[in-house]
Length: 282
Image (cartoon, rainbow, N blue to C red; front, side, top):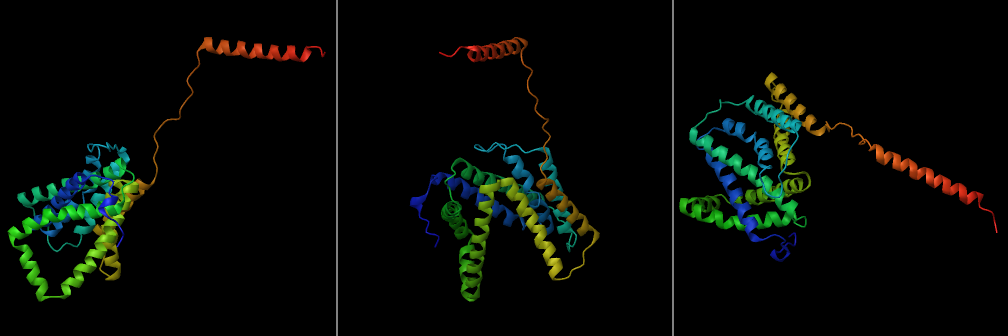
């Protein structure tokens, strides 16, 4: 519907093979970790996404980003605040498992690679559009997903379940449309502001979503909720306020010989002007 065709591509297919592999690894490890971790434990790890994104940006070819110290502090405040807020009303305590922790850590590494790879694509080739990245990474990701779904039997289970409950098709179409809008928005943020800022925005978005749920459904806010919101606000404000520690530049002192030479040149020019004025008219 957007009118995009593969003929309009400005990047090679191998770029999207890498991106799709990282994308599938991120989603697969995130979903799979829930078999070994409960939801509060997964939230704790996923909330720290912005930190590995900032660190990984220094190692991606084409980016080599370096962030000032106050941005790391801002990200840390945001992460701690979100963890406190999300765990304030958790029905169960975080439950950790070695396999689950390894899987969610792998998902975080994939997430940090994915955001920075997307930023590198936009940086190294400014003509790249968000539609191209989304279309090509999705098309290439299809052959990645089909073989494991067939081998595990999930594809046939899902097909049978959807046939028994036709309303699921409508839900899937709506979810696909919402995901499309969300992915285009995230890719636009990455192209304009970078992967780290986008990670901070999506992290703060989780807090706003949770806060709205408390306002709409009138759930009680505790002191831990307030502390989490305060830290999130501090992190966002610290990110927004420009901080410049560079000292004021001073002019380099001139050499004494060059200074005397300049004065002599000025004096000669003044004498020349005086001769022109005193020259008799013919």
